[in-house]
Length: 487
Ligand code: ADP
Image 1 (cartoon, rainbow, N blue to C red):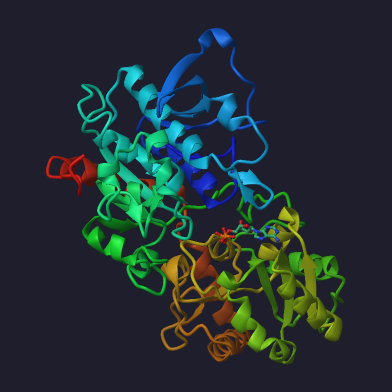
Image 2 (image 1 turned 120 degrees about the vertical axis):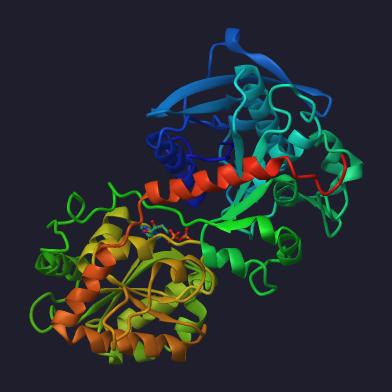
């Protein structure tokens, strides 16, 4: 596996979680996994100079060492130590500015990773690359390493975690990345006059995955394809959606040390203690009748993607619904102000905490009755899975991973795990909220709904098994695969 981040070494988002957790889960299934990522400043000390070697790229030598670190059963990390490129502040950039040499930095990661694999002397069954930073790895396998006796022809899988990041750069970068101008075509690496590392990953891999089944379909449409829908439609037969798992140890209501009382599906009454603590944490009254009123939690980056624009249209309605709303998040200053004002206007019904607070996030998952996640798009989403586990009923827009993980509750059949709505509008959101609040009045029905959610399997093991199927499929198809452009 090749990735620009992986826990516990480096993380800026979901990619880091996946690249850290998936190797462990695959290892537990008996597969042998090495994940290769850069050694960034602060993640590990540099290696002694005697172990160093030269990796050439674009006619320049780069001073590189490989640090091997055990991760778990059958799994290890290899950190590519190249101080010139990676020993600096920031993984992708500093503040809001990307490092200007990112194409070179991540091309070197792909190049060095392939050299490491080749020199390790064991032909891997699969090379799995993630997101735009490692998009060149599948391409290099078709060019520079095509005839390599050890790794030439190894099957490749490429995972898209976020289609919005496309690794777009001026074409003048091509020689420095050792990509020939022949590949600067729409079928190769060209995207509207620029080169796209994401496109390299998509066009030169055997199988492409993304992080939910529904998102795998949505990115084929102009609405959610971010300009890549055409590129992906050409590869639609090889595009697979696999949900991310969650860290079931850290997010477990039976063992969570960050909440005041622990509970299981059979002791859900303990949630009331967490709810009391939660209301207090937001400075709200925590006695009857306030304790009886349902608490709706929102834990989110405050950005348009998460639906805060259309949620804003109906903001004033919320305090009149008969619930308490608690928001934890930060992001767009406009949304921060909007929510602060709402809390100031309805101090007994609305609590707002602007910031990032892991402990409070756990308390909210444990103490709230419902979690609201009205995303416009959501490749996978984690919070709704944590909620299901904590018996906190999710109310979500039916998009991407939200739609794959939350089954809309039917009052008729009594089946389902949450409440979903289709339209990205305030009116649709309010309808779903009202539906949830109605069911909440029926205690037994609500309890059954909570328990159905808590029984879902969101383990990494389940996801890892799906990846294994994809690896087998990639390997099997490989004989028939031809790169879209003859290198
Ligand atoms: P995204 O990666 O798009 O932000 P996800 O739902 O996939 O959304 O993951 C968000 C993660 O970040 C979850 O683990 C959530 O609990 C956490 N999170 C988001 N905002 C906050 C916050 N303000 N404080 C604490 N945790 C947060």
